[in-house]
Length: 331
Figure 1: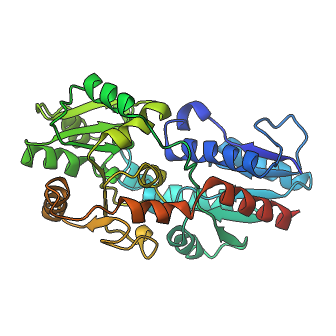
Figure 2 (figure 1 turned 120 degrees about the vertical axis):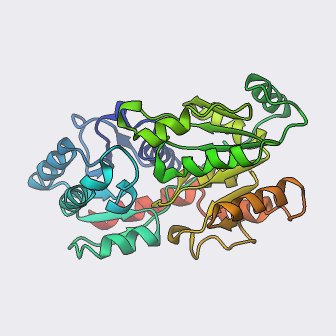
């Protein structure tokens, strides 16, 4: 059994969650001993498609015509396309139609959470839908004290400073406006947002937010996976202010790194993550600020150990075995 991991336009998606998910699939297949190819030219028994470009749709139709089973990974829905890029909300209904058209080419649809499965089921598509986490390589998300020290020095963070970070595209859906507002209201803490989005795709309010000039706020842009590894453990708090996700790989990374974590209380995190047991959850800006101070002043207990136990359920070798079962089912 050889799998073709099909992901078109990698140059466009390699800094996104989909790009990270593809890396996780490669690790999962290696852990399960499943041969795979990243090119269409090599012989394969199943095509596993991750992208929704026209070329991806064409590849799916071609595979079906040639009798090759199609597994389509539904990383995106109409909901998480909204509040992303300039004009995204106006295009969301058309985008939803296109997503459905792509996913309906499949023999099996995979999606990363029960929440995203529920959204897909509302489209009443014919292919079966199965939930499978993007998974996490627990062994990777570790760093040394020296690495953490050098990381903080690189970004001008003193040993006594409390550092708050977030990781993601610079878009409204990810909660970047709240992140900037928190930096304004809490000048005693250092804030860094790691991630980059082409300014041509951003609305005026997001551009203005990124250009905010504060001594405790930085937007250094995209950093590679190795540096993100250190960032989670060099920080004092990870904020995931996102308004919509299908899973949120960065949350898996933060919990695997044993970073203190606050997330927005949105459907995708229920019931998988329990408030004040696995992570802290908040809805309003005032609540985020209250929890942040409580954690950093050590007035609230750390949840890093229970958060780590929760994310351990999604370890990459377990995902590899689940993928193997799904591939066998479509064969």
